[in-house]
Image 1 (tube, rainbow, N blue to C red):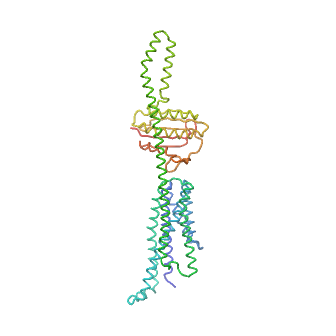
Image 2: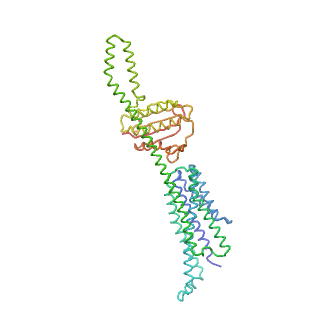
Image 3: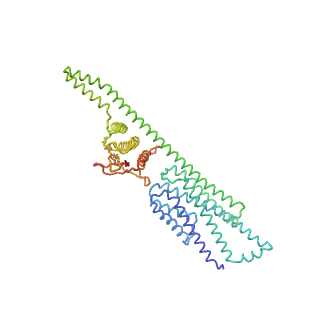
Length: 475
């Protein structure tokens, strides 16, 4: 009987516990950027460790792939309960970790088996050496020597697993990014396929390894070149996942950039419309001012002749002309006047009531172009939401509060507002490319003035409204 048998058991238990804790750490590291409630991440790791340790210590045998699958599912369940956003994305991360873990395990196993085989062949060859045969005879019969060999093998195994798995997870995080873009069903299928194939291939390899060893009563690791071949195979599987994820994220980034370009182009068209509106108003004003002398002479002549009734009609006609060339809304700035006038005509066509109490700040250094971006996007979203309501009403107002200038846009809203936990902005239900960048544009302008955007549903002037508040710091 081997007197060191209890030590083998202790070392094996410690080795498994260390591996499980490190695997849990890597799982948490992978999902950390995608969890809003990061203070609860320890629960995800704890669930993973608890389930795997419980399955390890139970008296019944269970397949390692099934055991690690159950542990990953438990961690996924805790993760989804802690943060209910983007369930599909969390499933992909769990599957990706499960697959990467097995691939790195296969690479490490191949390296350690090759190293152990090399060491074993060198050690056995000692018995045929005339000078070192004594060393072989003295050490091969010692129980403690084989215990030290087992310890060295465990240390090598763990020492290789740590940098390889950690590095693989870091590369995966870099390729996948750290955003919280929700995955669609097709996107999930694209990313899930290489991961699923990797796990399936590992299971097939394990099946044939077991079948070969039962049929030949030999270890499959004794086949020449087997370790190198499997290392290359697992590495190719991992690189396939990494490349697919990287290409997917590059594609998503190009989509976002294209959407931003579309929004910028639309904003430029809006600005062009506003400039044309301002130019039209000023052209009419210049023409009216040019004709003012003739109008006054005509009125003077009519009054001089005593044709008071005709002079009154002429004056009324002049008043009508002045109203036609004056902006519909006087906010204190010609650019914002043009923006609000255009949006007001749009609302009139769609049967939306518009209450405008917006006033351009006389002081504070706010750029009219920046305010036009805020007003355009805010009113465009309000119009889009109001079209779906029975009561169509939009309120726009502004007010200074100490060193802040606040713009409020409210529309009657009876639906439910879903807000992204990370950005604080509403989640769009539209699927068109470029949709949803308007709110990001408003936030970008607000932060330019050290402010921010707040959006929520509340009782506003006696009605349930969706209210957007844009806070800008003024000097």
